Amino acid sequence: MDRLIKQGQTALPTSWGNFTMIAYSVTEEEPMPHLAMVHEDFDPTKPVYLRIHSECLTGDLFHSHRCDCGEQLDRAMEMAAEKGGVVLYLRQEGRGIGLINKIKAYNLQDEGLNTADANSHLGLEVDGRHYDIALQMMKDLKISEVHLLTNNPLKLEAVEDSEVKVISRIPLVIKAKAENFNYLKTKKDLMGHFLDND
Image (cartoon, rainbow, N blue to C red; front, side, top):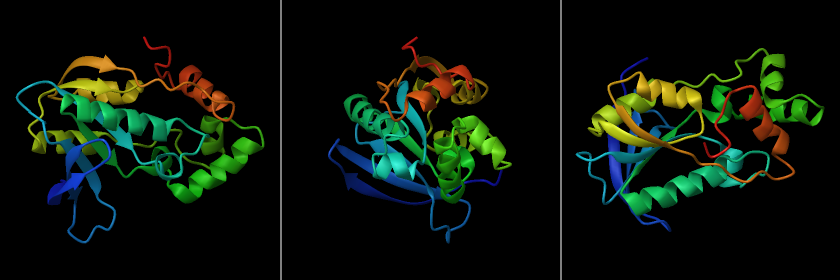
């Protein structure tokens, strides 16, 4: 993994509150950098409420009901605003397979495959995301202790195996809809996601 470099930052007032948006990438020319949304009350000397969120264009921007990603992002931003926290937005669309392959996987899901089997059918990893990106961002932000907002055991493991201390895991469980019930069931049953508020 190449070393991420802070390329720029700006004040960003949002409907949740005032944040600083910081762009990280390997090169200055990168058009799609990873982003840190840092609330104005952020204090790295205290445990930070932190969400590692992988990009989901369909859920985050278009509020797709095929997943729970957009609602998780909204809740994380709300909590970051309440707690002076941070949301790390990683450009890892579709659990790392990219938007075009995600669209192909959606079509396979419509034919009866679950989200994991659809990726495998395309010759792709079920989950190809990497969290060392987030760890580099946390190091730059001088974050040493976190309340981690996640349902994903791989994210939890990645942070626990780093120099950052996980004080607690805070679930972001979204009530299932008819359109994403099977998707969430697959995440729980096959990927081990914590989806019972436990």
